[in-house]
Length: 374
Image (cartoon, rainbow, N blue to C red; front, top):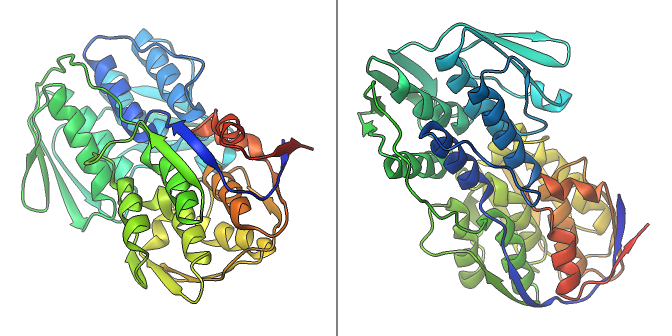
């Protein structure tokens, strides 16, 4: 789907969808406490994949678990599958299956799916904190189900501590004990999940786009998000209020990097360095490269080197055409860019927002954006 967005400020109120990161985790903990997950039509694609994957896993079916493009689904369900069966097949897009896989699993790639063999055993797991934090979260969900005690030893510091803290809060809510132990975590075995109600906050990574829009001149009331929050992306609200520093460590907020890049690109006379942005290399695509490619045709200037993004601010963007490369975060960033562009912005592949925020385009229309489907 290709959309043409016309320049103009946004006004009104919008309610955020449930936090994608938190929703995955609560679904898993609920399922492990005996509540079979129920999928709804308004779920984003990723959360729906986790919901359906849990149904497949818990039903005992040998049908491959379809993760679509969701790295979270694959990385959180894979170790759980290894506690329940000797062999499990997962399928997904080519892009997903090319992303890093957990180092503790025996994985064989077979065409459009992967085959995971062997059981998860209690013991010591040594994992670099530079790897995707979902590897660690997956173990934290699975290891309590084993009969013996386990430890997770971080061989390098965590890049995304916020996501691990979110996992730990969900586990605690559902009666699971995990202890911090030196450079890692101790996980007692033989535990049982106990069901508990846990409200799911609105998604701060989605909300970051609207807070940036406000910084660029729009007047939007963002409902459904909380402060303080278990989501590290709530940092964006403070940055919008206080102003971007010249140097910002974004290791803990990789999903908000596109919105922050846009804010920096439209802060005139200001050069911003987003450091530790390398986690964006292993998202749906290499966002370091794609953000540069997305903003360049709109008149923005972004350079990347190593782990850092250099963003050169200006007063207004020119407008132009953006290929999302099927990245929902890039699509949302481009949409907000239209609010400070001299000409219209055409977005190719706009349907990708269904990954996390299916109602995004409808919400923009409600806020007054003129959108034409091409």
